[in-house]
Length: 362
Image (cartoon, rainbow, N blue to C red; front, side, top):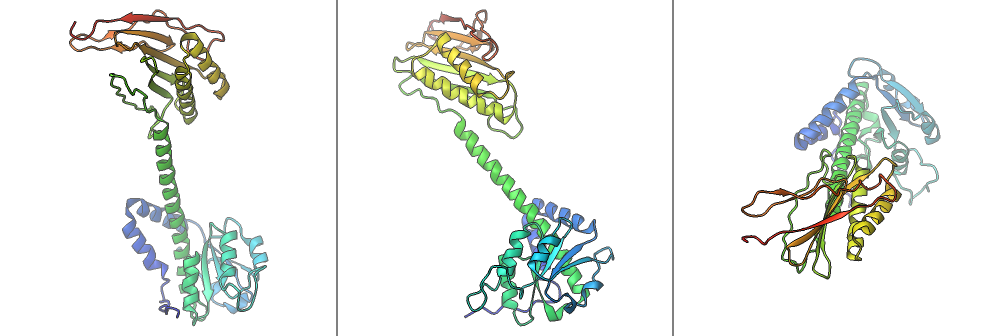
C-alpha cells in the first residue's frame, strides 16, 4: 500500500530542506549556499514552462523575482520545443508531469515520471519544478526523489508562491551543484593521494643488516609525490644498492617520469647492470618518456658491499651524499668524478669511485 504523503504547504518544501542542509553542512556548504544565493539574485530569472496549454496558468505573467523584476517566461508545448528553447540563460524549468515523454509507452505500463526523467537527462544543469494535480502528492514527492527540486499543485498556484518556488529551486540546484563539485574534488584528491602513496617505493633489503629511513617532502603544494625519486634494493650477492634522483620541474608529468626512472633503475639493478651500462640505459628511458627535449634528471647511486665497509659512488649531475658515523663529523663524499645529468649529452660516460671506512668504534 502506498505511504501517504502530506500535502504541500504554501511555502515550497525545499525552503526547510535548504535551511537544514546549510545548518548541517558546515562551512563549505554555507559558502556554497551564499554563492548560490548571490548568483540567483544577480540577474533576472528566466523560466521555461513546458505545458501543453500555457494559457491554463494565468498567474505566470504576474511573477516577480527577488528584486521586483518580472520573471522572463518561455513556453514550450512539448519536449521538442523545450529542447530548442533550453539555452544557458534559462534558470528553471516548470514541467507538467502529465505530458507524454517521446518514445515512451502509454497505458498501464507507462512510467508516470518518464517526461521528468527525459527533462533531467537533457537539462542536467537546470533547476526543475514538477507541476502535478492537487490530489497527486505522492507523484510529486516521487518527482523530487527522482531529481526535481520541488513539486507544485496546479490548482493551488499563485504568482507569489510560484515566484518563491522558482527562486528556491534555482538556489537549491546551484547549492547542490557546488556541493557535488566539492565532493568530487575531495574524492579526486583522495584518489590522487592513494595513487601517489602506491607509487612511493618499498625498499627491498631482506637479509641485510642495514636499516633504511627516508623523509620525502615534494615541492608541489598539497602533493605527496614530486619529481624527486629514490629506492634501495639488495641483490643476491649481498650488495645493497641505493639511489636518489631528481627530474627537473615540479609538475605531475615530472613526478610520473621520476616513478618510471625509479622502476627502471630497480629492474636494471636486479638484472645485474651497473655503472655506465645502467645509467646509459636509464638515459634512453628518459629520452623516450620525457615530454620535452629539455627535460633532464640528476642521479646519485651508492653500492654498499656486503661487509658494510666498502662502497661505490656514481653521480650524474647530482650533489654528492654525506656519510655520517657515530662520534664523527659528517663527511661529504667525493664529487670530482661527477658525470652529466641524464638526458643532456648523448653517449655520455659516468665515472665512478670507491671508498672504504673503518667500522664504528675502530
